[in-house]
Image 1 (spheres, rainbow, N blue to C red):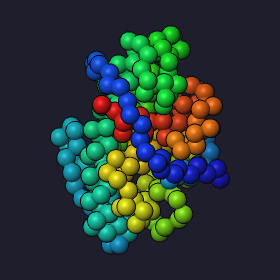
Image 2: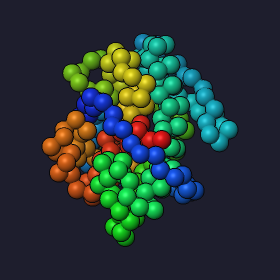
Image 3: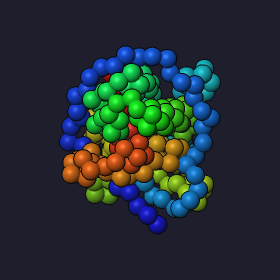
Image 4: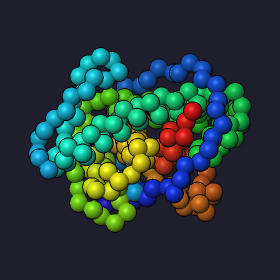
Length: 231
């Protein structure tokens, strides 16, 4: 079984605001393709459900296992913030179609508006729509004991068909900033529903600098930190 571990970045980078053109229509929600068993990492009472209203006016049911009241509230708040961040990220990345954007260059290696750049932007938009749809779906969360620097993980591939939960490590998750908690969910849901990988983590500066554009637009940390630094 392949593992991917995420560790939090020390601090988020500044960014330049970009115009906010119309956002492309969202593709249907789907889980990551079944290819291999991947346990994707991002560095209580049973069965209690909380209901929230999603963006379409329906009822979103969040299922929690082994997570106390503080953890549930932090997850609910992180979902709400992540929706806002991803929506802003969609506007920002669409703005990169008109020319170079420092933030797009840093996180996705998109440096201009060549056909390859525009194709990469299209992929980024698609992944963000998958994440945004997932954030409004009936998500399951399971609390886990501390495990080093690991903040959360999901299963994809064959195991993911039977374990659909986002596994959150406490109390570490509660001790993170609001932006970092939102980033954790974006990171994990990009694994679960868009099949992203862990090619480099933001704190791995050398590895990050060498990452290709192809890998950057398939990299979970690229999506979560571009989003939390969106305008």
